[in-house]
Length: 413
Image (cartoon, rainbow, N blue to C red; front, side, top):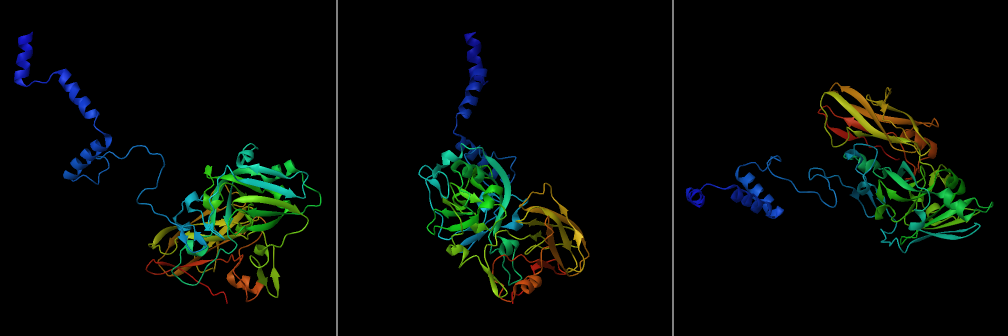
């Protein structure tokens, strides 16, 4: 037996034990070294672009987008806009939700943060984030939109440039009515002040009826804690109301008989209607925008699916109409189910483009019967000094003969 083993070694044959030992030796190589080794082999073989030849990275602690997908918000000194043209549904990823700040984003330790409810109440109370999470939770999907969400002026504008100050999320929290029942509301109370913890101490007063309707204190967004830019650790959510009223970094609610007439509801967020100034225009009017095709897309003759979003602060979308002949005629678009109240609704319209220059437009009718107006109609109703709030005109895209798409700007004068 010994002689036979000696002969095997001399002839270079590999025993089962030797083979297993070699496999184990390879198996204990660091994963990084092994991947680098495989990658170098693939590169030498000219296969670096073939994902089936090179092992990819393993599971991580936090997911990320493909390096080929790079949607970004477009920032200014006070806001940043959601890239509406890059989204594929009505839900906005939390990191792409538009931002509008009055004094930057505060850093707040949730363990030290409290919400005070006082004023015309039976018992003034403070609630921590942990306290709020003990109450029955509610989840709903709705949009938030800045009252000043409209820009025009040049052809090279994307949906993000024009209407990027609106976003939609799935919000989770506690109904405000639950908390008001907890403290007990004085029958004389008709309004409540909401105050934030930012450096601007952003404040607005809200009719008490909204609290009994659908107002919420929310602490989660799209399945995770609210992002700091959206009000972490808690914010007020008023579905359908002006974005600035949905106070972020919420720290105080005070019940009262009258509105407090804060800076943001007197010198700001008001607008002229002919010879008067309109205040407390809470609900956002119905509007829509085509997100494809839009600048800077280019289309080809033949089938084009027109897509976009529509929404109303007063309830559900009843219908969206699309015109492919500069507004001469209108046809109904298909609405993506489910159609939710006070929520972005996706619409689609199949169009066979004949290659001739034209304009495409969309307009929406909500469940109250309100029809989205043209800019001309808005100016006729409000007067020449129209201001920058609650501007919801029908918008048009120019389709050139070469297939290029440009925004059709309109004058506010």
